[in-house]
Image (cartoon, rainbow, N blue to C red; front, side, top):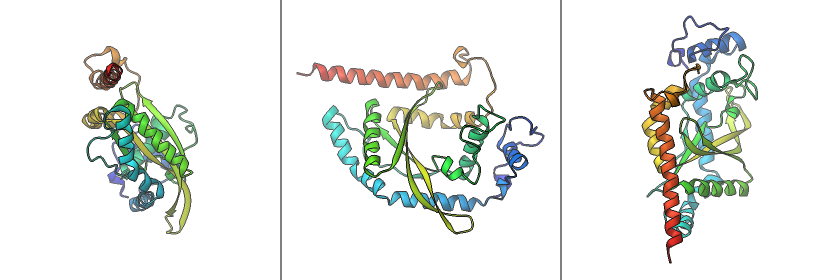
Length: 277
């Protein structure tokens, strides 16, 4: 990988302080841990990522999950009177770009590390372990129409993980900035190439995110804003909740308002069902 593709504004950064850019992070890795990420061949990362994607795509778990979607939709329809998915929905497995992957190690090692300058919880994320430590190298998104569909499909996927003897963890995210989604991480063994072109067997996580149609619309609209914010070193500032002119006020409350609207839709839907003869 060429250094210039990820180098950004690192000149003059003080290595004694928290690196404020990815460029500064690369210098910190080299100076503190003797890790020259710039020499890591980008092709190697993608050879691993695409191998994991292909193996998961052809696994019994994924084939069965995709094949069950029609049945899940019918079961939810019979239970609620409403469809579970948007028309012609089919999940797609995606690969995290190398730049995003490196950025995430930066966030985990530095920006979100509450123990800085010591190692984060679980230890430093380095090339020797980062394929098993970053849990969304391969990921997918399920979009359901209604609020209660999130828990419904998460439960189905979790049950399928158990049937396939796959460990899984679920996180229901409700962030201060108005982000709402469920994340299921399914773990399984993968045989991946080593940089020496030998192979090694490791455990990797696949991220299965589940969100609603409304939340997915707002996520797409605000994606660039959230990505820009995640790259910044967090500096204490006045509470955004009290500054109606700041970007956070509008963006974050929009997410909360949509979540509230979805809850109200569910309430109306359930009351209508109760009133039916």
